[in-house]
Amino acid sequence: KNEVEQSPQNLTAQEGEFITINCSYSVGISALHWLQQHPGGGIVSLFMLSSGKKKHGRLIATINIQEKHSSLHITASHPRDSAVYICAVDYGGATNKLIFGTGTLLAVQP
Amino acid sequence: EPEVTQTPSHQVTQMGQEVILRCVPISNHLYFYWYRQILGQKVEFLVSFYNNEISEKSEIFDDQFSVERPDGSNFTLKIRSTKLEDSAMYFCASSLGRNNEQFFGPGTRLTVL
Image (cartoon, rainbow over the protein chains, first blue to last red):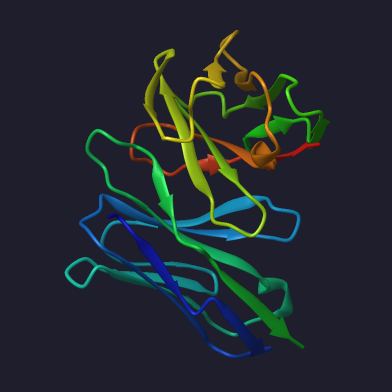
């Protein structure tokens, strides 16, 4: 079964802390996506990666294909980073759907 | 910056009624998707659409659901006879190519009474 697991489910941090959210998946993928969902529901794509590492501002995403694992890091966290962070995978091939994880609810306190 | 738009933002309907959710994908994108998220649950894939036909659909996407690209800009999801369990947030997404980054709309919250 193609599963996407995220940890932790909930995370509370103090402003300025370094945050790591983890994602693991069960079978080989074409690409992994990190998405952000704010209260009110809208989904924003943060990263799409198939190998290595990507950085955008204070966000860093890494993926280890052999270990079937990805991490999303937030440096110098800020209350405005509070949101649900979702990992989703694309198995490629004939399919082009995304399989979503359950999300990590992040609350950054001032 | 181009974005995916969806209307309405919130739709309330009675069980058994038909609803049409509308999406305008990014204009040069070729692949279109519908996903849904039941409150408190993860986002689930419904259907993908390319070249005016469904390329893949999930088990959720039964005969009550249909999609259409009626005019080259809109992409619609129709639910023929809504059930209580269809209450969810429905997201439209589009991508330039297969296995490319998908851009999501703001969602339509469907409430079936």
